Length: 484
View 1 (tube, one colour):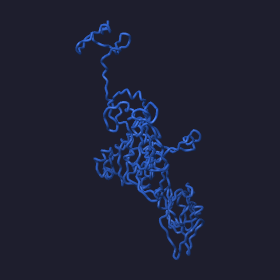
View 2 (cartoon, rainbow, N blue to C red):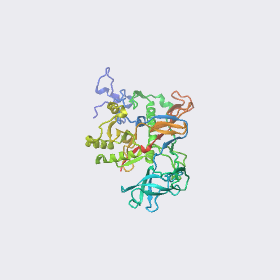
View 3 (cartoon, rainbow, N blue to C red):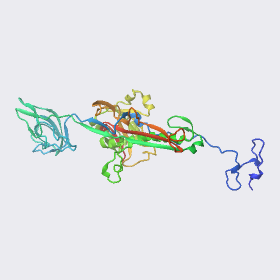
């Protein structure tokens, strides 16, 4: 027999006393339940449990770059080419000289080496010879050379690299400007090819990013409070705008994620592609490094500093930016820690914090730890975007992104609009803006509820919009770490 009284047997007590005959049972259901007469509400925790901690992913671009306005549909910048003359993959004919390969870029002169210039010739086995150019054909790319120490090029392999290190003129020789064709040296005239500096042009286009949060007027009239601690550091109570707050935070993450993950649409995919659907895309950080930078596949910190030193050797060939930042997945970050811990006595220069005014406290407050290897300073931190399970944190396999190396500081580029050289951070965001329209981060209300009076819609709509793209300058100094 149940010890709980039925509804007809309930006798209210004059005071707040726990008696057998004043108990209301409302959690059992059925005909004998007293749900309709309950007078005590269940215990409800108002405060949210932050089981995922800080859920936002943005902040990466704020640490490594800047944001600048632009007015056009496209941003175009030019980057300097190398200063010295060098050719890879040349054919060593041994009898007829050396042939420079056909350039892959359209409009590029095949051969700009003049007669009388002195060159170093190297093959893949480490053999080399030094020679003077006796004749040069700008059209066919054929060089007739006279070695200084050997009479033939037979000692070198069939494929060689050459670069110019100077010139030697015979007595009494003059110079002249030469056009295309075969050029030969003689005692009276030594023709020279004029080299006009060129630059490589790159561009990117902004994309429009939008989101909206909608709540109808009826729901706005029923208030339910929730105590929250938001990712932007504020605490307090929210009601229906709790969802609006999360929509805004998610949108702010999208602003950064678009710049990191963006891809340019290509028409090569044919029907069903984004191009045919009217979309153009934008080139994000990962795509820019894969197209123009360096990709390290299967970095193995277990091999000590060997793999890392190979990265440094490659950076030496690209520009040697002294200070660099490493944003890493947790696993690779721990591999770095193990690598540095095992060879801590051999890491040249020890710990360095030059980028942070040589302040270890400033670096650690931003989550960075620093070390020096060779002539380079590195500042390492975990990148939450690569660790979060809702983004790339659960990704494994050959194409997994495990980290990026980004040069710190600025680079000099030629601005097509200003017509002059300007200094810009290697990594920065451009957003659409003018004197009357700023599209960096727009937010506005529409509808007929919640203070909005713009339409007959019985709801409030919170709209978010931005138009932006990422500029990755000198991508040859960036490194992308990929899994195997």
